Image 1 (cartoon, protein in one colour):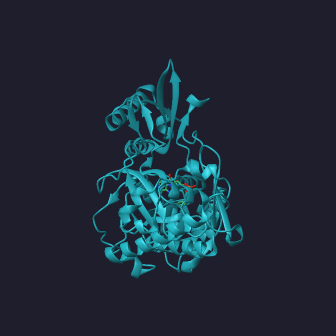
Image 2: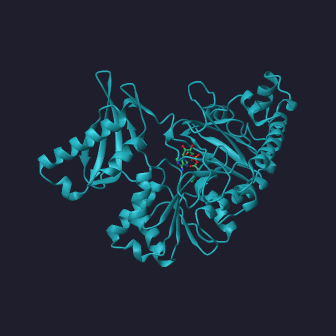
Length: 432
Ligand code: DLL
């Protein structure tokens, strides 16, 4: 099922021509209306006629999160505030907030792109969509909401939290699609067990998950526990919110809405493009945003393009699921480690629960890393010998996967704090 087949199945030449035209007008818009970009373009002695091909984009400077902070709150808006109909903000996990704005057209585009993502995931107007993302300054709730209404589905804007009520409503209102973070989906699955609710007795068929990194193993876990098709969708407030890219039912990479966003993947060290298909940092330029255009925004998200065509028929290029952020990367004894690598191993070990936390401490000037792993009750209360065997097993699997040794501690079920939104996997005690 396609939402806009003409665009989703466009030829590469047609798409690139459209991107070039839109890029030219975006550059004109920011060069005229945003003092921050005007200054940068002037410094470069940039001439609009210089953009003749999409590769010319690489001559332009990157925009960093700090640039948004320096221009807090409205400094990067490209339209007067009277033309802004919505404001969202991202508090981020560290640092001060950033503010983003939308014109009426931006909201229309946003709804349309989210409608594409929802449709690609298999959801139609006949579905009942339970939106368990927070509604508010976070873009998740409102973003998915407008797209879901546009396709004509029945939307339940329950927002995040109050897990028992979520399940009650899911049963009573016969929700067929669940929208939230993947970690919250697992929290719901656990709560169902506790409440004695059999997921097979629900009407749920689809799960659209995003907002945080997750692994293929976690997808399988969700699929098994809730019996649904779980697709990934990606976005970030700085360039719009959800709707940048999303998986089709092949569940093998996220189709990028390339007619509205130009994506580059750069080597984080050299800031040069990586060879096609290799992992690097995602950099995004908006092509149609009116109120808050972004030129070459450094997302810090790590992914790669999937060059092969997708069997679904969409020609929009795919990106692989985001494996983490360059600033989430833990450097342990000189080795780069991502939380999702640890997650992948834990999912493969029998008796462990999909809840874990990585604790980093500093002892005698050396960093230590301990992975707290929830285990099933029977194992937690089992004899020491058995526990020690499990710990050794996890340790050896982790050191083979990561190339560095870590400590492992088994903890009781439900002892790691649960999140209704984005999960907090890393506790860095070095900053205390
Ligand atoms: O999380 C937008 C969103 C909401 C996307 C709901 C999808 C669904 P921010 O709060 O600005 O916006 O956080 C953006 O979250 O740079 C990634 O690091 C991470 N992220 C978002 N989606 C995914 C995903 C929203 N599917 C930041 N996989 C991004 C991995 C994701 N990471």
